Amino acid sequence: MIIGIDDTDSNEGMCTTYLGALLLEELQAFGTVETPPILVRLNPTIPYKTRGNAAVALKLRTDCPEKVMGHVINRIRELARLECEKTNPGAVFIPEEACERLKPVLLAFMEEAVRDVIEIERAKALISELGIPAKGLKNGRGLIGALAACGAMLNLEKWDHTFEYLAYRQQENWGTPRFVDKESLFEADRETYPETWDTVDLANGLVVCVPHSADPVLFGIRGKSPKTVTRAASMVRAEPAARFAVYRTNQGTDMHLLPAANLAEIRDMHSYRAEGTVSAAPKTIQGGHVIFSLRDRKGNEIDCAAFEPTKNFRALVRKLMPGDRIALSGSVMSRTLNIEKIEIKALAPLYTEENPKCPECGKHMKSAGQGQGFRCKKCGTAAPSKVRCETERSLVPGFYEVPPCARRHLAKPLVREGCQDCKVHPAR
Ligand code: ATP
Image 1 (tube, protein in one colour):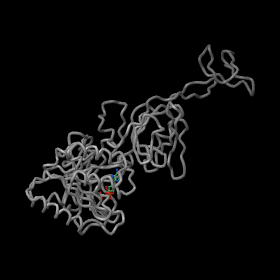
Image 2 (cartoon, protein in one colour):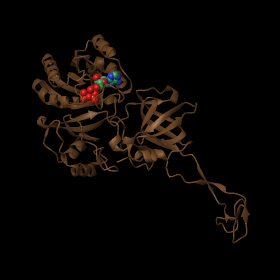
Image 3 (cartoon, helix red, strand yellow):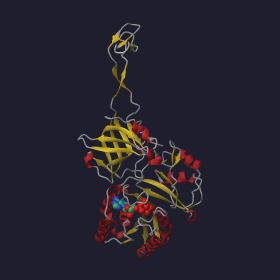
Image 4 (cartoon, protein in one colour):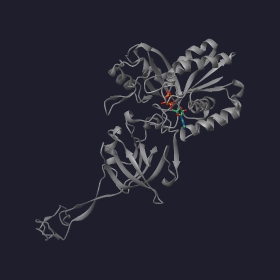
């Protein structure tokens, strides 16, 4: 049986991945739980999300499915933050005999949930049409994420993946400041990068893997394999953890990106890879956000932004000039593309005006007085005006990204592209 769950938390606490980790232990009493469990990140622009739009799926061999369903629903009732308006849990149960039949339809549903916007009614209609046992609490919006997580579990071979080791706090500590030794996180990063990433942000001197909210997560280590994330986690000195889980996840895969053939087709609440030419120079607006315009071949334009939280990435964006050819990836809200990554494909030439050079000695001439052109004192040569010269840009073509502290869960870090190519500049 595959169990999908979603939408159990609120800003005041809980986390669906915590419930997943708890059920991973408790469901052993009803059969054999297969590992790793699945953590899917869905459309990052969905307004209903509490934080990272995550949903979870577990796989269990059991001969008492009714009891399992009862237990999972009871635990959701006990632990979900039902008092919060935005918490609308959903649980979906795919019986073993239905798995083959539901594989393709739930793969399509998962891909849609990552890239598009789905109405609750559609999820409910699909559940009843396919005869899937499910339980929605309150408006049941979590059924969308729960179905998508089952789609991910059923189709492991169909999507790129990474892993995350999530350590959870003891319940009596929830809501209090976390103790995680900062230096040990920097050490773990030094020892395991590039097999792990986004534990810390070296350029900005920040810890990235420890949340600040009231949820039960102590820290999360992201990386290539269960072995490397577990090794990095073993180096972390912190308050005692209550439990942990290593999830297989679509984090760091760019699964949310749609190719945009032209900028006219770009819609809010979707994420794209889009190409074009910088058409208006970057401007820094109030709040420190940097905005410029991108134009495609047909003349369609869109605003692109490196917001203040992207920190040092903004310095790179400010160096762009009209005429630069680039490709961007990011999510679109209010007709503005929030940049996650940039490929600088070709730079526009930069011209400056210089005093002319003497054709005899090659040195720059000096001004001969106002309105009298330029003269070389040594050779006696003269020229009427300044000359236009191409100057080197302080930017090199290649791939760049926002720093770890501003990374979207789904964005594929450049370190995963391999660093042997000098055109790839992973932020660390
Ligand atoms: P949690 O830890 O509870 O999962 P979260 O930050 O992941 O917190 P949720 O509280 O799950 O966010 O809220 C997201 C809600 O949006 C869920 O009900 C989920 O089913 C729904 N949802 C996810 N993806 C989509 C989508 N593509 N279209 C519409 N609704 C979606």
